[in-house]
Amino acid sequence: MLMILGPVVGGYLVDAKGWRWTMWIVIILGGALLVPLALLEESYKPVILKRRALARGQALPPKPDPKTALKMIFTITLARPTLMLFKEPIVQAVALYSSFAFAVLFGFFEAYPFVFQREYGMNLGETGLCFLGIAAGLCVGCIIYLVQDKVFYVPARRKHHGSPPPEIRLIPAMIGSGLMPVGLFWFAWTARADIHFIVPCIAGVPFGAGLVLVFVCPHNPAIANPQY
Image 1 (cartoon, rainbow, N blue to C red):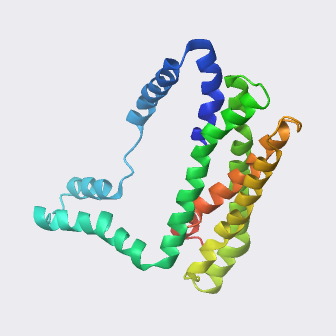
Image 2: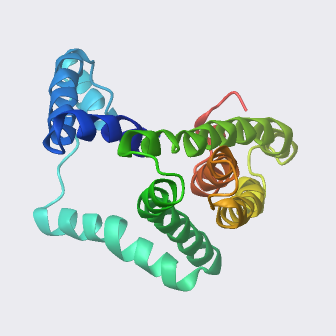
C-alpha cells in the first residue's frame, strides 16, 4: 500500500518543492517512528524466554559453537529455500508468478506517467492520483482474502483436524490470477485519449486485488491462530 501512496503524495510534492522533498518526507517519517518504537515492549520469543530464565535464576541452554550456528543459519536462510525452489514445482510456480506480478506493478510506475501525461495531459500530481485505483484494488483483495479464508480455509482446517490439504491455500492465488489479466487487458484497451481517464484508472482495481491475492496466498494467518 505504501508503494502506491508514494506516487500520490510524491507527485504534488515534486511539483511544489522539488524531488529532494520525496527523500526528506521519508526521513521525517522514519525519525518520527523511532519514538514509538523505542517505547514498544519486546516481542521476540527467544529474547523473552532468555529474560524470563534470567529473572528466575534458571540456567540458559548452551550456545552452539560458531561453526554449528553458522551452518544452521546457512541451511535455514539459503540452502533449504534454494533447494525447495529447484525441487518443488509449486514453489517455482508461486515464486515466478509473484515476481511477475511485482514486475508489472513497478512497470506501472513508468506506464502511468506515460499514459496519463501524454494521452490525457495531466501533471505529475494528477498522475499520482491515478494510482488510487490500484490502492482500492489492494483493499478489495484483502476483503476477498478474508472472505475466502472463512468460507474455504477455516472449514477445511476443521474438517481435517488442523491439517488441511496444502492446495487449499492456493485459492486466493487462483482468484487473483484471474483478476490480474482482467486489469491488464482493461488498462491496455482503454488507455487512449478518446476514452475518459477514469476508465483506465478503474482498471487498477482488479489488478491491485489480484496482486495482493497472489502475494499473500502462501502466508495464511489462520495457521498461527489456535482458535481454528
